[in-house]
Length: 188
Image 1: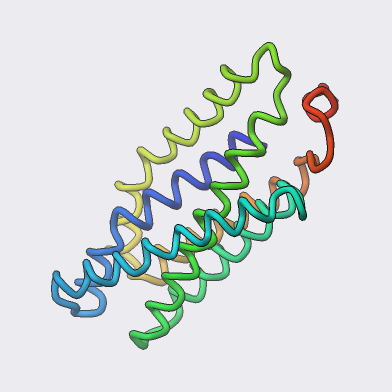
Image 2: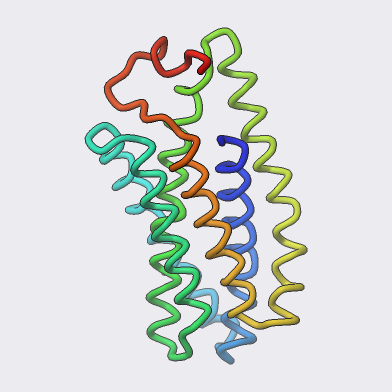
């Protein structure tokens, strides 16, 4: 479950944010300067996304926050691929940025809680490494999707990937809220 979640987040993050300036400049005919301004605005939305999720983790639970933030990032991705007016594109880009980074916050807290102490560091590193492998694929796959299908194709894939992560956590994840590490990391 964690390997899928890490793959989803690293793939979507590197796929989206590596190519966002290019998408804005080519799809929207924005100047390079305007495109970078938009990326700055969108990237700044990551800060409150990360911290709102972090603040909610102990109140709501890691599993629930990870699922909700992944779902909202998926919905944002789907809607970004469908809209054509500039303000809506900027809005949905901000939504994706906010919730994608919020999901990272949940995953950073959730991952080590699910592994036994004796393997926690190695196992968490292995899950993050799987994510990094997905992150290697994203910068190549994203422009191909964009080239053959435009923003709708690229962001439909990002939507599906975010939703896949949410469903995987929903089905396979356990809630760690209010439990000790000994309770959460027992093999089932």
